Amino acid sequence: MWWLISLKHKANKKVYFSKIGTLFTKDKGTSYGSFEYKQCYSTYKGHYPTTKFQKVTLSLYSALQALNNPEKGDMVAALGELTGEFALRKLRDQMKADPDGQLILQERPIIDEKTVDFDRLKDSPAGTFGRAYFEFMEGHGFSPDSRAPVRFVDDEELAYVILRYRQVHDFWHVLTGLPPSILGELALKWVELIQTGLPVCALSAVFGPLRLSQGDRILLQQKYLPWAIRTAQKSKPLMNVYYERYFNAQLDVFRKELALVQAPKHI
Image (cartoon, rainbow, N blue to C red; front, side, top):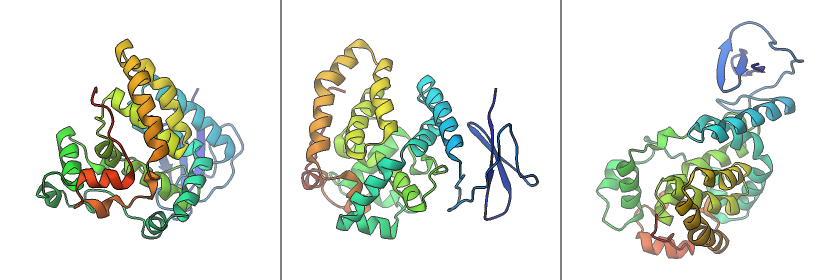
């Protein structure tokens, strides 16, 4: 049975109806579904406000879908937003207490095809952070535009925090040297869990190893988990780094500045 959730958008006065996992609009009407409707207004572009009951329902559904198929990025993204408020508040406070983090919150840089000059990064000197980032994205066929927009975080500032977390993920791959394989993603997820405290990271870290071969599980436990714990605890808070300003920096020097040690080379 599908739960149908109605959401009201303040900007254009349209009512949003959401079948879990699918969002669509209808011009008329104020409620839909089998439970009482409560008016909720959006606080930023793309925001779908939800009641506490709706958050719980969507969280359970998205968790089940993400566990069943971790490749469903929209479900993983929704789960992160719906369960991450406490962790996001701590991250926001951590950023406000740091000069660079505070600047990021003030300027709110966006990482996408419009703001990152990949042609310039392509011509950057070898060994620079910008060149390494270009090669990582180009080599794997990635685009920063592929990151899901934020929909379910109600606080507008916290919505930016989780968007920033998503958009700097590929920078962390470059800095740690971890590839976007299952094993590489799980190793990085442990770093993210310790640094951010986001529940969605815990879900991936705990259940993700079930997708690994026995040999890779041993590698994760013996090599990458100890590395991830040390790295997350000793390195600078990675959400407080204005990465875009370090594109011309030598990658090795940048890592030292962050007190970040590359991952073991077994992956």
